[in-house]
Length: 136
Image (cartoon, rainbow, N blue to C red):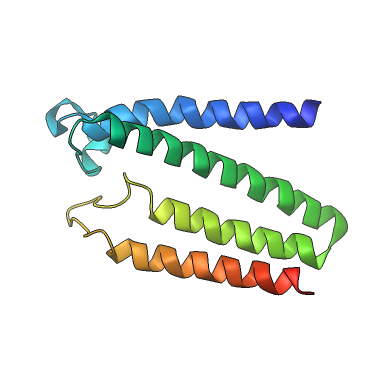
């Protein structure tokens, strides 16, 4: 039962972090604290807010899964557990590179697709490793 409680905790962490970030995404640059002025400003809409929240929850879940399976690998030294860690890390990197607040950060606005290509490469690598492990 305690293990399943962590699912709720991770979901709550994702929501608690995601809601303020969704507000930052639509605030004008002048109203943002210093560091958050680096993030792109989106049109105020519920769609982008929901997207930022759900993406944040997804990143939190992937991070938790990496920690869980890394611990399983360290305890068992199983190749399948190591493969899952590789797959989950690749998916985590893909999720971070696709994160709406990451696209367009800094002085140069990156067009959607600049980081998407790299994110897609991590996704394909993750699926390839997962398929290879599944066929062993």
